[in-house]
Amino acid sequence: MKRVAHPKWLSLVPYIRPFSHRPHVLCAACDINTAQCDASVTSRLYASRSKSWRTYLFCQFKEEVGMVYRFHVNEQTCINCGICMDLCPVRCLDMSRPSGEGTIGQASERQSPIPGDSAQHAWMMLTPVQVAPCVGCQICAQECPTNAITIENKVSQVAYAERGSLSYLPPEDGWQPLDAYTRAYPEEPGETPWGEGRAWHVAERHSSWQSWRTWLGERKEDLRAPCQAACPVGTNAGLYVSLIAEGRYDEALQVASEPNPFPCICGRVCTAPCEDVCRRGEFDAPIAIRDLKRFAMDNGAPSKRKVTPPRHRRAERVAIVGAGPTGLSAAYYLARRGYSVTIYDAMPVAGGMMAIGIPAYRLPRAELNRDIDAICELGVELRLNTAIGRDVTLDELQESYDGVLLAVGAQHSQRLHIPGESMLTGVIPATLFLKQFNLSSETRMSGNVVVVGGGSTAMDAARSALRAGASSVQILYRRTRAEMPAQVEEVRAALEEGIQILELVAPLSILGTEEGNVSGIRCQRMQLGEPDARGRRSPVGTGRDR
Image (cartoon, rainbow, N blue to C red; front, side, top):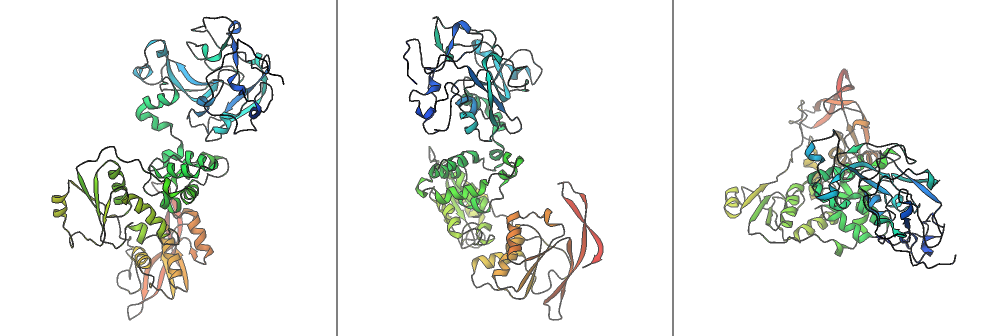
């Protein structure tokens, strides 16, 4: 198609990202592949002042865009992030609404801090709406983190409703860029080709989406994606997943490791609460967020793992007792804030239950040490084999440091409180066995082993016992497999290794020989009763032995 120069053409604000890396995107203006449009079709769209009540689009390849597209967003999957609105090259999306009469929220919440005429824009929508013709470039649909956007069939421009009165007209007649027109009020969504009106949300829109999010303060936490909100440290999972999809592994590593002291560890043994709330799970299955974090840490360059250093070093010194997850996490965040931190631990290795409770086949020690070394690189000092009360007293720590944090953890196993539990040789708490197994390669076990419980500790103990030489391993659980707190993959791995799981069985007593050794276990059949306070069905004894 021949290119025609026209002196009345003015360029819009350039699109923030080039189209050249998306050769499959088509623009409705002339159906020319945008990768072949060296002038960038979407930067050559104009509106006519003489038809200002209705937005007409024109480009340098065609006199008028006769057909446009219809934008649709799934309200159930939209997370109100505003990405589509920020990226739209023709500004056809909006989420703002004027203040004024309303009953939602307090009157003070409906007042904008922005002076002048802009103060009328004081509301936000829960989802974006289309307020102008769409050229079908598909950028919003491709960049939407939850795949909530679809661009529907072409519709004629005449089907679009009027936009409302203008608050400002360009001083010159003729063709002007679209952003030369400003309006006192965005169109109130109602009976429009793109759907019914949608509910409004009490929130303020500032001059731009990102600045609005900054001004919002604490309320901006409500606008995070569900996966990020569910993460205890607020990791932006959607961002590092997107970076992995684009092959930018080094940047994905940076995003995954910046807020998290244990990215390598969490990529392998995290319980992944983010996946429980992943919106993708409403359609088929959640995104494998944890496994993708592991992929980022395995494939990103280790040198790219950089934590933002503190702006100022503080004079205060902090002592932490315990080098487990809590102690190391506290040291990580304190060091990032400029404090001098020293960790004391009685164990010969750092990591706490991550080191002595989780077997190496689940969490390789190289990956564990990789995270611990990164914390030490912040200036944290580790003093292992140092027990409080034996090598140093708490009073000495209080005299030498400005603050002392006790992070000794919960190291003791739960008791069954049944006959034979504390008197017979061969009854061992799972945490103690895992400690011996993880610290010494010479730990051995023979004969038949029974593990009571259905959590991750029980699965680790059962699988470790098999590796330590047990001839058979059985797991007793008082509920069904569906109620097991252990992760699905742990249960599946245990079954694949030949471990037997006995459901709806609870121990009554442990039997022993005259010499004091374990000889058996007496159990009773259980059945599921009414749900408890947490929603789990409580096991009830049937009175029948097994």
